[in-house]
Each structure stands twice: as structure tokens, then as C-alpha cells.
Length: 118
Image 1 (cartoon, one colour):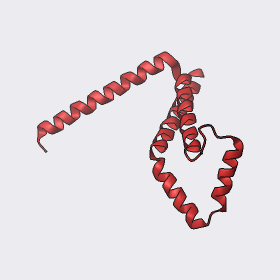
Image 2 (spheres, rainbow, N blue to C red):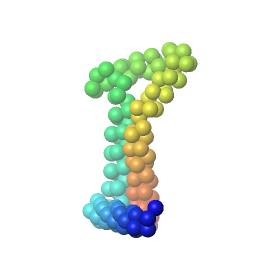
Image 3 (spheres, rainbow, N blue to C red):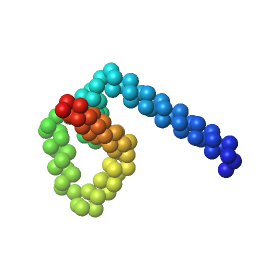
């Protein structure tokens, strides 16, 4: 690669990290560390809700519908259950990223909140 390409890549990376740092600083200044943890909890709630309702026939599943869905999954033969698990894993790749991001926000916000309270 040409040295100019490396320089352009370094400038783009530095600009991205600077923007991310300023965004994080602004977010913490406005909502605080407890707010960061609450945002993470909201992200986790939305991701888990999406994962639970994706296979549901109704937009707002009831406890009875979720219980019936769980019974259907348990009654299948092991090969069909593994095939369904592989299909769900493939469909929920973005939800995995969202849950990881939400968990990181909860841990970071909660840890820093407790650290700054002492």
C-alpha cells in the first residue's frame, strides 16, 4: 500500500475516535453514569423483547402464547430442535451485537457510577 493510503487511513481513524470520544463525553455530561447504565438496560430490554416476539404470531404475545411456543420447541426431535436453534442464531446476529453493546453500557455505567459514589 502507498504511504498516502496509510496516512489517509490514520487520519480517518483518528477523526472517528475523536468523534466517539466527544460523543461519549457529551453523553456522560448530560445523563451521568447512572444514565449510561439506564440506556444500556433499555437496549437490553428492546433486544430481548425483539428476540421473544419474533417467532410469535401476535405482536403482543401473552404468557399463554409464550408457554405454548416453549412446549412446541420441547416436543420436537433433537435434530429439528438443533436446526431451529441454528436458524434463530443466524437471524439474531444483530441482536447479539445489540445485547453485547447493552451489557457493556450497563457494566460501564454501573461500575463508574459506583466508583464515583465512594
